[in-house]
Image (cartoon, rainbow, N blue to C red; front, side, top):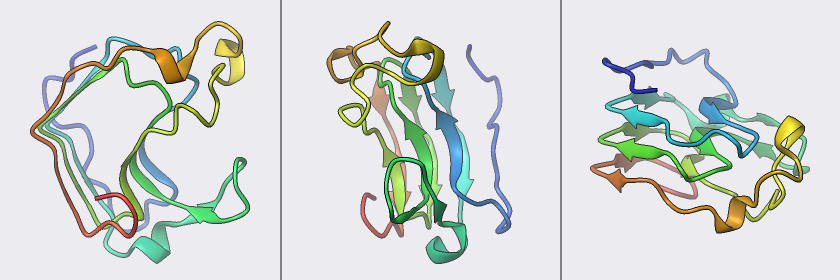
Length: 120
């Protein structure tokens, strides 16, 4: 689905992940001109199910077969994080039905990210 306008301007109370594309079967979506801001990366971090560390990402996408166009992401631990190899068979209802580390990339252009602790 193509969002006609930016979907997210997150307040400082947002924690964990700004935009979450979880299971690996979400494909051919268009994330266009979103603004995802965390005012302080440490305040946005939360415990996760896949690591013992706390974690925060502006955009988290297990599957990369989506278009990421002209998004603005700032202040997160990871501005854009795509850990497809972490769950190579997908998650949830998609488990065993996708191969996230071998899915083709969608369009990826015009991102502006800054202030990330790890990526971005």
